[in-house]
Length: 264
Image (tube, rainbow, N blue to C red; front, side, top):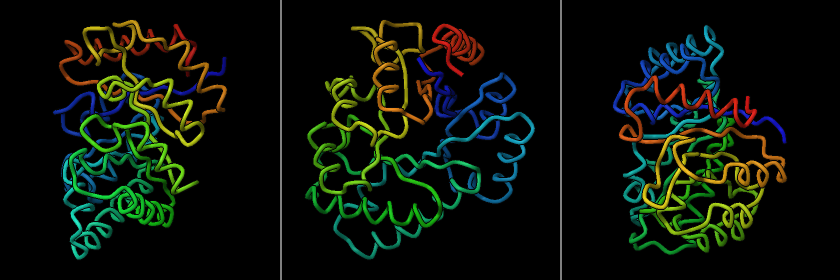
């Protein structure tokens, strides 16, 4: 088995302030992260310098970014109000530029809610526009499967891939797949190498979001399946603050997990 990189998303430490969360992960030997920025201030140059200094001083890599605006994406992009859509495309161009500036190459996208009155073709066309903008900034946008969104459905994701071709790229989130009653392994089978980013967590029959090693999820099977696809991305632990007692417990468990599965 290959040795894929593993890390922890700053979202796992929410509501800790972003720069403090990044510093904590870096000081505790976490080599990869995803920046979940929580306000516009956190993408300003003053903060960008803090992130870049941290990556330089500790060697932690920012693999991806994730915006606090994700709950607004139905309104920003899928309401049918074209002037707002165009304005929102320019807003996200700033987000893509920020992603590139901090060294990331992936931007995570939630999209429309499941109930949003938006035709699939309209959705796919907007995503294609976003992907074109991201490419201009030197990054890619990756649609995450999210239980409350249209992307909860594997059929929707398959249709997205068929319509957009190479422009359709994905973030697989294990807990969100379980909440949507979709098999993560079936999603991998269907989307294949279009999956460029993973959010991992453990689970049991009673709890769908646990720190790795606190549940019974088949990580051996996951790593084998992704290795067969020559997956080049990162496995980012993304859990909620109520999934652990202390932040030190989280990083300790992730280090044990890394050693057990011979990850890097």
